[in-house]
Image (cartoon, one colour):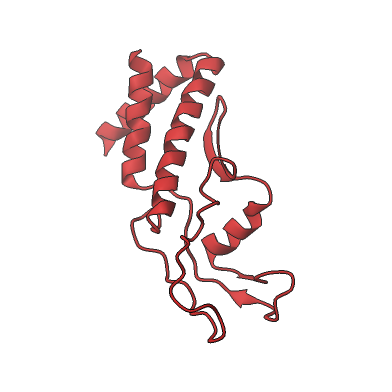
Length: 151
């Protein structure tokens, strides 16, 4: 454990020696890689830790027959709604605009109204974590930092 701490301290010192512009560029690069990883997880319908999303709720009898062919969160994972941003101090991946509320409801499993005109008042959604990091993501971050420092 102490070996990692020493490595982390030296790495943070190297990063601190970079100019703010180069740190921002490195953070933006890392954020883009993390966004790609998050998009792959959402496309595969799994949480960042690798567990599958909870299944969709069964539709009422009067609804259209057959299975739902559309993936969950297909539009949500596009670059239009999932933003990657890097500053000189951090790299962030977040949902932007009007989809933030819907993403929060599904991420934490909160209650929400399905649509403005729905007969159901509040529906309890299953928790489907959309954003997060895994051990693989941490490895990608470390590799990106080292590659950037080597240049």
